[in-house]
Amino acid sequence: MRKTVIPFGPQHPVLPEPIHLKLTLVDERVVEAIPNLGYVHRGLERLADVRDFHQMIQVVERVCGICSMIHAHCYCMGIEELMAVEVPPRAQFLRVIWSEVHRIQSHLLWLGLFADSFGFESLFMQFWRIREKIMDISESTTGNRVIVSVNVIGGVRRDLSAEQTRWLLTELDWVEEQIQRLQTTMMEDYTVKKRTVGKGVLTAQQAYELGAVGPVARGSGLSQDTRQTSYAAYGELYFEPVVETEGDCYARSKVRFREALASVDLIRRALDKLPAGEVRAKVKSLKPPKGETVMRVEQPRGELLYYFKGSGEKNLDRLRIRTPTFANIPPLLAMLPGVYLSDVPVVTLSIDPCISCTER
Amino acid sequence: MQAVKRFINRMRSKSPWLLHFDCGSCNGCDIEILACLTPVYDVERFGIINVGNPFHADVLLVSGTVNHRNKKVLTNLHAQMPSPKLVVAIGACGLSGGIFREAYNVVGGIHKVLPVDVYVPGCPPKPEAIIDGVVLGLQKLQRLHEQPSVEKEA
Ligand code: SF4
Image (cartoon, rainbow over all chains, first blue to last red; front, side, top):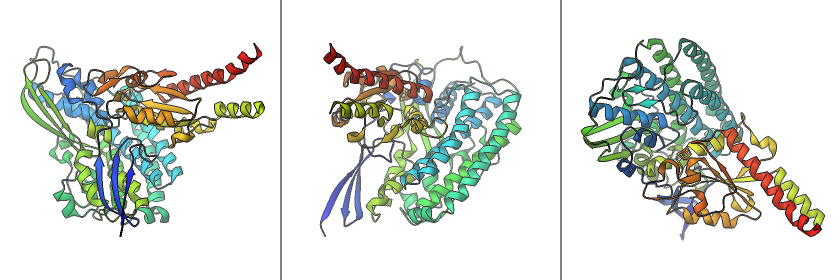
């Protein structure tokens, strides 16, 4: 049978970002996919040469606008470790709260785009309608919608008042109810099942060998979540990774639904236990970071890894960022062979690709 | 003929179709552009539709900085759009390179490769600001339509 090569992307309607896959097809089925990246590479890691380590917080937030809070959180944790800063417990809890707000936002965004990828546009609108409520929460508690900029070295910039906490709880109830309602709409829909069940299957063995992270790994039955390492305040909040075993697109969307609901619960528990006190430690008199360290946190898309090397100067010697999508590209290439061409957008989107993260 | 042209121009500015290109942005601007299309802001009620095909688009929304790799993709897309066309640069990145201006793979703002009609500042700009930018651009487009006839009369 003759082979056909079809380019997918870089400018493709279902993907908001430029990713280019070279698909080799036999008949209508994919036999091989070769990724071609680099369209949004900016060279952000080297900005550490010109910006000092305080200014770098703003830069790492812009690695990816969708999970800016979590990037900044990871970066601050690393620098705090190098400088031996003790972060006040209230700040730890607030960081968890905002990180989880971001996770819900990101999962809703993804669920919307995913629904759009198989042509369910009204569902896309519904998810984004709920997401706007989360954006309101971000805006009224941090001052910004997307890039929240609340992290500083030694804590956070803002505090939650009692009134805000109460308001947050009522809003969360609404969000939870809406997500649950859409969960039944989406997961029990015949057409959705038709497009997602059994598509792009990744077995647990493959997921393990190829180093899948985040919802992709958990959708294939691997129970790993970096939040289990109890960074920030996660140790004090009861927490269990969400795992599904089928390993197809359906399982991955189920994981994200359940994670969004779990995040709502986590925020509630964190608000409940929120300790009183300072939100920011004093770091003015401390020396700039010196030494090496590695930090890992859980992003909505999986494990995020930062490597720091400082020599006691204002500028870091090296900052290395490994983002979850980078780890999830090999699993994607393993999922694609055997898939019909018309399912390629759905399968590609099911790993939640964040290209601007990957290419930095 | 003149009447048909006038009709087309009127329709073009009353129902502009957008093409969005992510040109090395951090996603912050992209999700705000997408948010414009969703129920809370809902630009579709003004007849604005986001299309994936440059041949159908009147307005090119570009977010992010130009880099050495996507420079060509961007100019290609712009060349494929039918004129008169409008370029709206979104966010600090599109204006000047923003926070990434010193990075090694960044060329700078969109104006380095394309003529830009409207700049929307902010990092990221709020959806209201983006809508405002597009509306400003449409006013400019309308003026462009009217100009040739003004010349004729004169
Ligand atoms: S202007 Fe800001 S939010 Fe927009 S792409 Fe640039 S860094 Fe991201």
